[in-house]
Image (tube, helix red, strand yellow):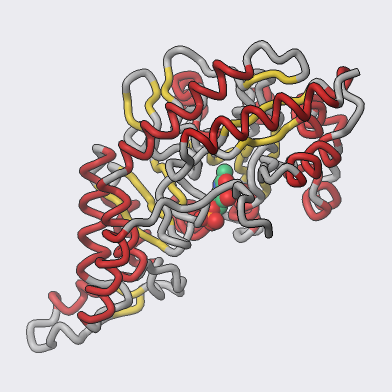
Length: 386
Ligand SMILES: Cc1ncc(COP(=O)(O)O)c(C=O)c1O
């Protein structure tokens, strides 16, 4: 890789994280322990939710949540096609059916009409994904879920932090799951968080994240010591570690300043690119605040002489890394074959996908980096204009 190549993403790690890691390693307690509990408590306080359960990934968080909801093989769970496959695969873990639906043309969030149409007596859960960090239409989703007695699990892998009508994402639905994967807005390398105000769900997730062990069982046996535990179900090995918490604790302290940096970059991109007629910028609704995890743009391919792959190569040649979010779930072999679905069933996502590209947006970018991205995008698109 060339020296001045601008990566699509780089985690924002400072000496605070390094010092916290060293402290943890020296303490001798490197798996789940006191720092994990502190991270969970601080996270709950930051979000404004009563319970946060830290786990090894968003995928683990989503899996544990569906387990706590009691999903069975005959059940159906509605998910949008414009997401990372993890959102759908957690449903398959139960032998249940992910009912994959199309997205809204403007926001690429789950389409309300598609959700309404997909509901059957078997529907148990809706998983709205806050695409790029912009909250979904949660009021309307909750109207639907209440009407049909369906639970809502928010996929907030992109939405830390984000607000919907003045409310923080993580406080609104039955459960909200976050991701701390390397490219996310708060990163612990790998990791995830389950946020809920439902004590029973939180308790079940805590037990199932570590082999189904109920550590409080010893309290029932006065003659037993705290070494006593009972396994109440065949759980999973999905626990968080204090090494991960050592990255998470300092990151959480600067989560708002990192958000401000992304907002500033987004504002500069918007200002500089809004009049470029070979692209369309992402629509942000006025009553919500995006985390700006991603800055997606849509190419007007009919006005350009190159396709997306060729343009991405051009940008790479000019030292700018970009991403693509996402190849729709219905286009992946397993999902299209297993559920017999194709592009015809998803007109919006299928038409938008070949046009999508995400620009770099992270707090470590300097003003010069942002200017370089803007200049390279404008030059490249103008060069290949029809
Ligand atoms: C929308 C969405 N959901 C879920 C996930 C899965 O997150 P994790 O890698 O923490 O399991 C991702 C990760 O890229 C994602 O983008």
